[in-house]
Amino acid sequence: LVAAGPMLTAPRGYGSLFVTSPDNARKKVNRLVDMGADIIKIAIEDDLQGKKWPILSEAEIQAIVEEAHKRGLPVSAHISHSKHLEIAINAGVDDLAHMIYNPLPDHLMKKMVEKKMVWVPTMELWNCVETVHKNGWLKVAVANLRKYVKAGGLVAMGTDYAGYVCEFELGMPM
Image (cartoon, rainbow, N blue to C red; front, side, top):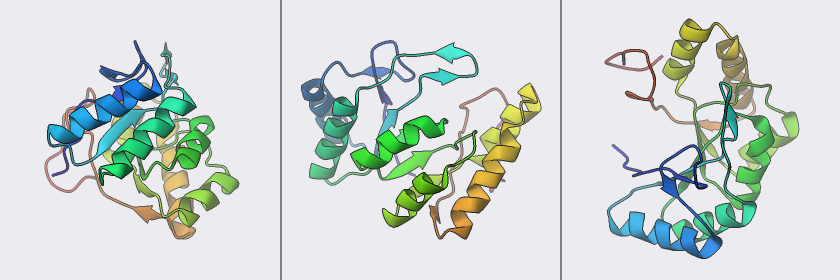
């Protein structure tokens, strides 16, 4: 079990622990670490299923990553659009939570593999999203995951337990 605590985000963003500046980001990271977090999770989401949110600035993301790394913790980014992936890569984020649901660009995949980023695709979540919305995202998510694995990318297993509308399936996620 890896505990992250609340997800860091911009005010009114996707998540619940608001960051207002790079200095504030450092303080929030230290607070989470002091409370026992094993990993720092950030949101880099501005548009998901028709909902729009403000997102962290690149300076805030960089401050989060630097402070977490200084304290010996990895940073996980909640991302679903490839347009935000480069921001995460350049900031030094260690892993990605969930899956890009638009095609993964080759140049970004190559950077992820070179930096040994871990991808936690939560395919059970994408199966649920496909079941509920019939939006074709599962097919793209599976293709992206296969492409990443074939390129030598590191993958970890995870779930989105109680994170969406479908009942969680006990046991190994799909």
